[in-house]
Each structure stands twice: as structure tokens, then as C-alpha cells.
Length: 130
Image (cartoon, rainbow, N blue to C red; front, side):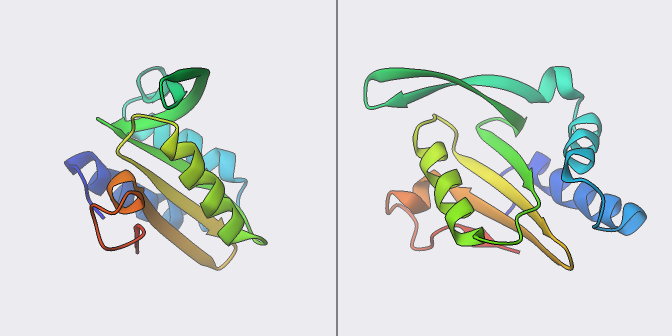
């Protein structure tokens, strides 16, 4: 789901990388390339505060490609649902609107938008999938 114009850029850049490189390289390479093409790691990689209610838990590094939206690249082949649950729980501790999760599971490529609004009932879905 394109929450911002930069989200469309993320999707388009991901497609170009996959068309050029295929889907079987180390997932870190895709994350580095996306960070590069979406503004550079110095701009995209940001430490964000984590909160449980009013209690500060510390900070976590996120690849933030749009205001309030981060992306995460994984290569999970087993326990995909558990990874999605983990990312949703992490998102709930942030002030981010969404995490766009790209999972490179060999031949199955998924881009899932995990949206805070969906998690808290403001939207009917539990995130959107492409």
C-alpha cells in the first residue's frame, strides 16, 4: 500500500533490484541498495525511541524512507507468521505509522504494509499485502 510517494518509490526500486539481481542474494544487499537509492544510509537509517505507554524503553535503528514509515527486509523461510507478529509488536512500541516489510522467501517475494491504524482498529484490515 502506498502510504506516501516514497512508498511507491520503495516498491518500484525493490522491483527493479529483483529484476536486475534476482531474489537469491543475501538480504542485507537488498537492504543496503534500497537505503542507497532512497536517500542514502545517512538519511534513511534512524534511531527511533521505543515506548510502552509513557515508559521509555530505549531506541532502535529503523530504515525510515518516508515520514512515519520504515522498511524492513528479511529472508524468512520458516515461521513467517511469527516474524510478522514480532514486527507488529515492534511497530506498536514506536511512533511510526507503518513498517513496510519485504520478505525474500526464495521464489515467494512479499511486500506487506504493517499499519498502526489497522492494528488498533481504525482500519478493517490487518495490514495490506502485495
